[in-house]
Length: 118
Figure 1: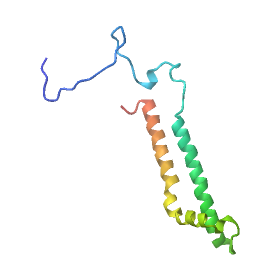
Figure 2 (figure 1 turned 120 degrees about the vertical axis):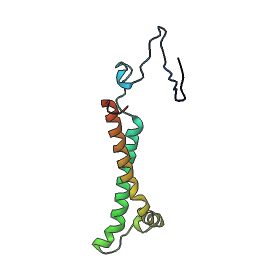
Figure 3 (figure 1 turned 30 degrees about the horizontal axis):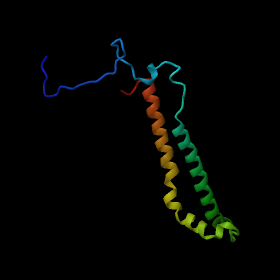
Figure 4 (figure 1 turned 90 degrees about the horizontal axis):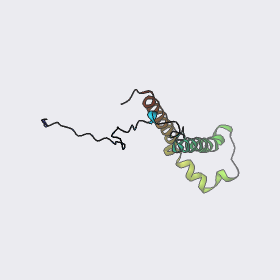
């Protein structure tokens, strides 16, 4: 056997009988694949929903007096609210980018499960 300059080495895990062990998630037995969802992705969706609600609350509280007239009384006049209102332009893209990234992740996983990706 001659090895050229582009010879590649491949490693495989084998069992005690010398058979290759499959690592494809779809090839695993059902008792191994019990969890059908990724808990980290679920946490990201929950965090994203909280971000959408938080940014929506800031927008409503900051733009509401402008549209409805009058002054807002209560916590909307406090210094913390002023800081939140001033950071709104930086916070607006966060929920949008998180949603887009999660949707891309879901489409990548869907294609991987269907065998469209290597």
